[in-house]
Image (cartoon, rainbow, N blue to C red; front, side, top):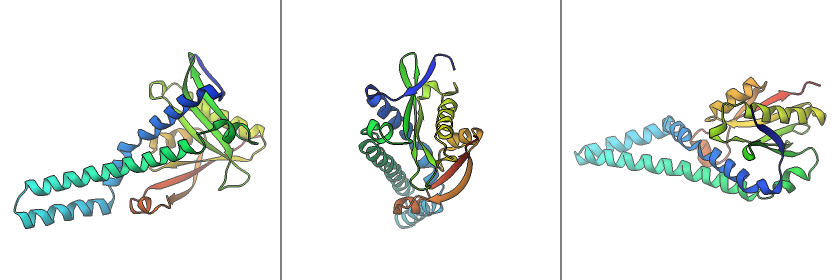
Length: 219
């Protein structure tokens, strides 16, 4: 991990941090679309559409076009869901990182810097859903710098912070499509303790699952 420095966030990092978050979240659109296509409800919709049209129209082209339009609509829905989440996050905790993470007790935000360029981020703060624990958030590493151990170093930074502050554990959340992140966290000592579907109606329909993971602090 040559030429990599992990330091606390500074105000001049704001725009690049937002960029990293936006790019990182947008990368999950293709895998989320694939996840949606695998759901029985989606497959049933496509099948019913195709069969109904091919029966009524006696044409093969019309049902193919209709299924293509349905697929395009489903993908656009996935894009909309991610864009909505990105916009909400940029408007809330990432709008003023200093206020959200640096000026509150037991919270912090770090960036990973390579040759003067911010290439990774991570944060933690007291967990709202698990009083007495810290929560790891906003983990992101620029695609061009992955595989260099940066994510592991950022994870360890949060683990060290958790231990230094006397918290017994740190938790985090991953989605069903974040398979690479799940492997990383498992390697870093996290274990899955809970699985649940995102409470929003559309997420329930699409069976979009989240995993809660926890790592015990070793004092």
